[in-house]
Image (spheres, each protein chain N blue to C red):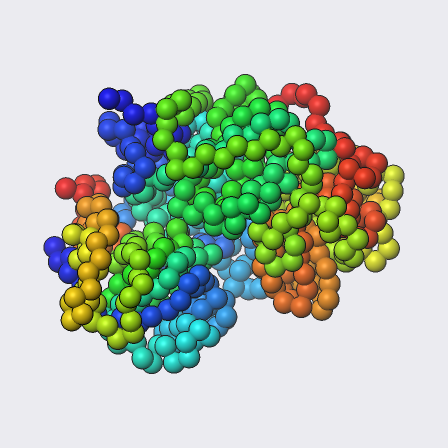
Length: 167
Length: 432
């Protein structure tokens, strides 16, 4: 199981309510592909255009707060976001990420800058920017959660393990 | 050495095998009952289809509730309802249709779960079930699909904040006011990821309706669950509704809490959350005089019988202020019927209020049946007051108890219910 993720850091701030910034509520009747083009544009115009597949979103506290809509995560997956590192997450958003196979790491993000080549080790619990010797330890994701992420989310996991045996 | 456990640790532990769970563990737990409402049905039904399970063995223990689009404002919403009814017929789920009531009211009323149970619902206010000593928590569509196929779901066992409530709320002061005071203190999402245990004499003195408000409104604190211990009132209430044999769960005396808060509630005045922020909270006397245009009573937080009784105690035989529009939405058909039997619907209608069919009602602009005008000021017993929640960012929503809303409707400005006749109403001992 690969637990090493590498990608370019894309910075966002604190208290980012995904409901406000990438929900279909503000693009009524549009499909996810259309909504995805506008992701976070109110905070950071052109964000979707700068994002490459595999990039890692680095955010402050309460990322995904006030939004339990799973669509917010579907859009980030569609854009190819490789992982999210944030000081803290909205509870349901955190669940939704794991359920949809999008790795999430809770970590103090001070010192990470835009365009840093970031490396995450989910099993060890480590966030690093090797080029600058930046390393921060985090509690590793529990094995049960790593298993869901490795499978690509809860639905593919259950297709492979209909009896939900994690070991 | 044995380490004490919280209610959350005990319930999640007993549902996930032999080892006791502790905060921070991730467990795959057996769920006792699940709920899906219309607001999340599109996503959930898509995820269920994607999962492609040959059977959904948990369907009989899942309720589909049509409450948010009640009544449906457009063809898309009406079609979601058609899809939900067809799904319910095909798989044999429980179904509560438009007009039956709000998910968090009809689940306990239907006797679908009991003390010590684990309940997963597609709504943040699923914390309500904790009023009955059940671990109720909000989930999303993928979670619901997993539960319907396997009867299980993964959970991270939350840390618990213990809140001991001493004293007894004054007449005219309610669990709503207490929660608003907590929001003022901890801030919205101040209990993010965590469970809250509410205990103490003030909780014991509360009737079930008020306890449901306490557990429900913990969602605004960001709580994953809000848990009360069961007592004779809880057990009598559940038994009267045909719930399974209760298995009450208590916290150990040496349970580990992430934080302990003690509040003496005896001197707490009615509280009001000011416009746009649920945690911008002041005592009602501080905002007295604020003009209002709308007075709204309802929602899963405060649309229950005791809320309607509070309003009727203030408004019976009187008339709301000129220019104020008052809407009352009972939380369920049962609440509506009992309010009718007690003459409360008549009293409120004569006073100038409009009483709507049961449902989520005026909580949020989903149905389009109440859109505020520019400059309109609303006082509501709902749970959220984000800018624009009632369809117009140029209007303002204040939040208070049903008693505060009714007292304000009477005078035309925000009013401390203790200053008007009937505002000191409180329930007397009665059968469950």
